[in-house]
Length: 583
Image (cartoon, rainbow, N blue to C red; front, side):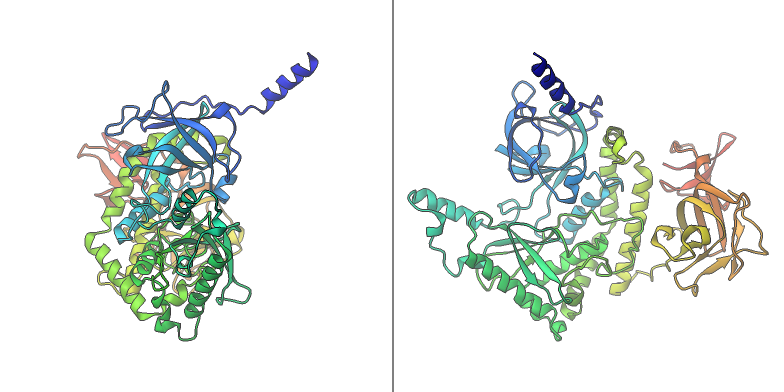
């Protein structure tokens, strides 16, 4: 009895806690129960489970299964870095094809957690829409839902089509299927007996430039730098891959690498092996997204069977490095701490540059407002669920308890990235990007130009920076102190919420109060005015007034006729004045 009691206590101690929160009611809910409610520990082995999709009254969403009649599926973990989070991503394999959330009917989906996307969940969904706009042959669809797993509310997830050979995805035949069919017809044989030909080794292939070791991988020395290696993970074929397959793939990638890094690489010999248009589309997407990890991990390529068939860059997948707060989006994506294989040398080929410009101009003609409209519509759909998700994962620090501010910041970054790209391509109508401006000081960053203290340019030509603590002496300058060097006038000190007139190459700046926490610095560089605002005094919720008598002023006292979400304004209405963030 004592032993049984101890076993019961042990079982209670290790049982996962069930979170008391309920779904927001604003999105469909996917309910999954594993067999015997077992935990999902493996990324390699599926476990049996059931599911049902409850539309929760959302128009246009079809129900699949029910609480009384759930449908069978298999589930396992997925991801590398993202698998380390407590809010985990999963791979789903349905027993029968289903058009979940209006996507193409399939058995194969991923549940993307995006636990580390604190940028209003905008990273992947924006990258996918830019990819569709670029004309890449296929881009994964994704739809938001809330997830309950084994009775535990897991928050906001994004059900996403996985990358695979399929008529509705990458429209190529899987070589593994041919071997499977042959084995069924030859029950006394094994796959080692399959009559592979030299042409079979040429494809079809789906591979990934990987930044993680994998069992299904060939490692190819890369001529980019001494000791560099390309980790090429083959996704398809996967089950029936011989040494001859691996040798062909090794030789093929090594040959392309030699062309890319040859002294005459600008002649574009690599374009005999790589489809130029899809390579250009893939680059346009990742440059607009400023995805500076795009050619080192989750970088997919595929080709059809046949030695003469070219490789195609795509589909896109992971935009986890996009919209980083500290990233300078005016830079080329090969200016990165990650290796970014091939792309820098590919860019030197004039025909590639011409194709990149042609695709960008086509997108510009359609209008990039399409992307911002998509973001706004998607954000409106997920906001309530995002707040519930942030509450669910508050102890882990995941999520977006504030959607408006990061959405506005992401859109500022995206506008700047598009403008800089268009300017660098020489497209008419695009202007030179604004100079990078930094807050530099003794207590702040030892007077260095650090990306964490880089001002964000706004549409109206001003600059903004949020700082957790502002103290000591400081100045506003560019990275070289040449183009921008703004300081104090007669050593006067700065009062909060009061525009201060800066002086070119003036003295060091200080706050009248010595220091302040949680402040926003707003720089009107054209007029040399700096306003430091204590955000703790800002109302975080503001109605979007329809009253024509409501007036909005920026912190310099200039009236604004079209206030922007996420910006701080002085608002005058009904005889009252308040400083607030407009939403």
